[in-house]
Image (cartoon, rainbow, N blue to C red; front, side, top):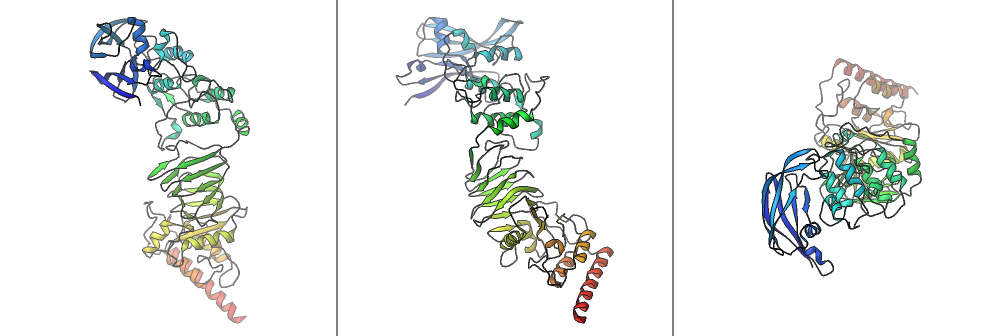
Length: 531
């Protein structure tokens, strides 16, 4: 096995210079010959001079390069004279002292600045991955010292361009991207870069500037996600003032329509990870998305894929209203889908047939289709548990309701049949008939006007069935009155960890509503007695 070695260190300011070489196998003996590299305070690595450049300058190279020292020299460049670091070292083979000038990384035109002009020189030099340069002069653009200028060198160059995340990502965790899909290297990732990829889609022997954003020498489906991830990113070094090409929705839709969706698997073995940290700013197309591992995956962005979302293990947290809005959510036994505190999210469908669990915490969920009101209530009852403490291991529950009930504060999961094939459910207090986080005159009207009290007629949560037994009776009336929340404003507490609010003393309006409900109860009982 080849070994690697670092030797002969020198520091200049915050930059570390060193000699590095690989004691390679016989298949590539030239790798035994060292080069000189720079490592800066931001953790960026770049080549100063490599073996081929040394050989061209000295007529030969040796295995030993050592005694590295630095000095400052005056360099006359394209825009005048400036100071630069020169590294002096011993070339043992020719027994001489050699010097290599350490220009500013990405300053290809040697004017001591990094500007768009440097990228104009760099872009035509980028080839397919692994294609060796035969002209030594072209090795100025070789950032990692392997005699090629390809995807890896673009990655290094972009590291010095300081791309700033798309402003629309504010509030989300944005990981360090392997590469920004800036095909034209103009300092901004926009729709033009997508069109470059689209124009070469399906072609082989292509490089980064033709849309090969993942470095496999072809333009194909895996190149789409790097562009999505870096769309809107702008270089703080060369991107100022560069206009961003407009997004063409028709062209985008046409491209997606021609793709064959692929399955996506997102493993989180432990801890907590956002979808962007897992490699997906947003998932726009997938035949299925499967979350594996015992950790927690957070969908904190809108996703538009239509394949099913399968939670096979661990937890999937929905932290965006449109996290799986066009997908059917399927939760396996022992796995869990949670709704982030205060979020009301939408799913295309909900499948808990495998006895998975959904926890709405202090949020809520709308299921667009496929879940009947009868099925919904059955799942809520499963999540409520046999003791009514909201600690069921399958179905639909609320950990916030469980925490409240444990402190003898009545909370539950309310639900609505929206009448258009969709159903909604959310953390709720008994009496909040329309699950809008308040108990007010509208809720009193729903309870009183429904006419279901002691009628034995089938009833819903909206009509006053807060016990999930399908009818409205004295127990439901007691639940309505016991919360003390009438006209008290939103009852979800500021703390998202519990969702528990203090129970206020009843005001006059609450007393009036209580009287109205009591009167309604008496009238219903009197009518039943007369009959």
